[in-house]
Image 1 (cartoon, rainbow, N blue to C red):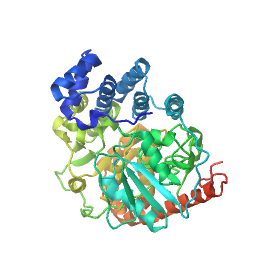
Image 2: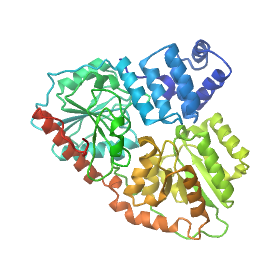
Image 3: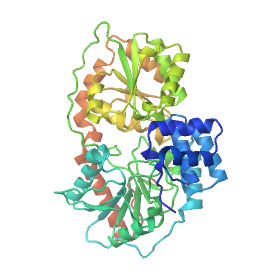
Image 4: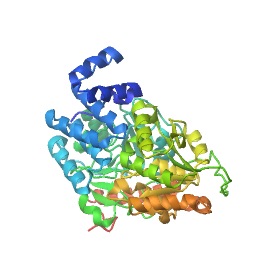
Length: 495
């Protein structure tokens, strides 16, 4: 299996809109390939053009269309990457079911994984040697989650290796983490390097969601124990992933049958933690002043924002006359996305002056902006993640609909950890009614904001030392079991 590397993530909004505008008009992939060479000096293959078309639809919030197109491409020109895109589209589509996701993941594994067992591999180090495979360590996720996690594991007596396959090469001084910059290595060469490093437990921080992945490294059984963690809580459908780390809200016991991995839980009840720094003060909750509109907001990625969701937000605004909504994300730089937002709200009779559309900004600016927000509206059926955490960190309540499967429960997990179960709804109608009730009430969200501010220090999602010490203990237990060649330990209560 070759690694996934597509030009899509390096091109701008104009190229993305142009791709699917042309495709909508019936232009074939061969034409698009030639035009990409002329317009952007890109020499790419037909398969890469097909993948870019699908991704352009996904990121424009058109997952149903993307799923249909990806499925057709998969049948016409089968490949591991296109089949993987079908699964990715499924996650943000209304077509998703847990059974369907499991079956499609297993089908992908049977066709493309070519999983290879290495019975000679065993844990043989004096202490656990942990390897992480990832391509986003240079982002805010690296600073706030990945490297704080690596640091705690190292301080807990584990040897930590980080295999960085993003284009940005880096090193970390003053820490025991061993950084391997492996962007240029093939799947086979990276697998060999990991085996040469004698890694005991290899952890995939990418999964299949990101445009770039290294699923092939795990298919080659590069370590005695292999784990899926952090970026994808859905099953990989592969035999060579032994564990997945997930909390009880995202993956309750009744859902274990939808996983080929053994589900590993941490005692704290969270699925990870962020070492956020208090760079922006939490504004004191105050009563609304006359003339200030109630402000709803969504800062989520647009691939999670579908037409039904936009119609739901429009209904809320229609029922709360003195309100506005801020929709802020990177993809609002695309004309196609702006047109879609305007079309849905306009059709619902909402004055477009009440819909604030904003583009990307720094994390610091984003956190300052939370001070102007009364209530964040979570996305569905694919809920938020880091955006929900940032809202809670800034003391802003998030309203969520907890639906089917882990994809619909991430925000619910974070809200439970914050003691905000009252903001976790069981249906779309409950979501609408709760939003309207909070906006029209005399206190608005003032009391919720006060309670959130008080709960931050108790929230495990903001306690990396505690959470990652529990992770270190769990990994050490897994390592000890493998070292002794015993059955994998049950750390979840899973039968």
